Image (cartoon, rainbow, N blue to C red; front, side, top):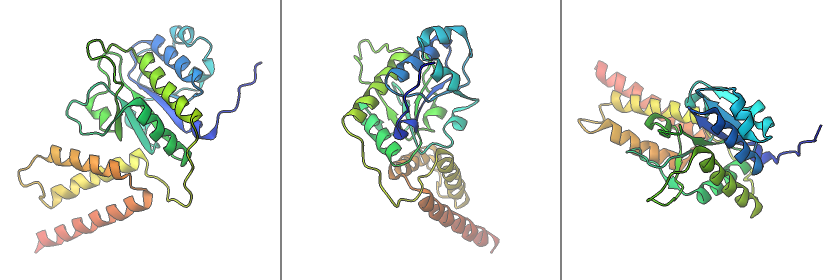
Amino acid sequence: MTDVPEQPLALSRVRFVLARTSHPGNIGSAARAIRTMGFRRLSLVAPAEYPHMDAYKMAAGADDVLEAAERFDSLREAVAECNLVLGATARLRGVALEELNPRMAARRALDAAAQGREVALVFGNEQSGLSNDEIKLCHAAVHIPSDPGYSSLNLAQAVQVVAYELRMARLEGSPQRQGNADPPSTAAELEGFFEHLATTLHDIDFHKGRSERTIMQRLRRFFLRAAPDQRELRVLRGILADVQRSAGLARRK
């Protein structure tokens, strides 16, 4: 039995998430792509067919990645414990998110991992990519600047590009971990805050005929860019709770 080299701790905090993959062979090819770059964490969201022999054939020996892969029913479940979620997409389709190229995304992901944060790099279905609901769960978008005249990257190629940039960023130098910081917010905690914020704005009749969707998109982008930690998020939710109580008292007068 061949010994498997120990994976550096920061890299172990980075996971690749494949959402609604149609073809099991693409799962195997993606496993091979991340394994060659030193990564092993793979999460599968509602794959059409898995496990499947085609996945193992295309993995070309990256069986350890496939055997350890976690499965989830939804992307929300898959990234719930993550502190940074980056979604690979060719187009944003009206969802307001910061756009990063793979090199920028790699540096941000490794910086976050070095600070003890859990990172997810998300890739959508081969034909349709990430849905709008899935993109909304991401903190930033990753766009591979391919030739607009022929931008036909398959799933495993997209995974390989991002995994390569992560490896290059690591080889160029590990970021320094920041000490004495409060724990970062998870994706699930942020989604809970956004739901609380939307409810509060509705309770105080903030929108007054303006587009609730547009306002919430802008607020999501603002808070995702600010990246509040858990303590800051508790303060924000405390403020929202007080606003809701005040609004309730005003309505009863």
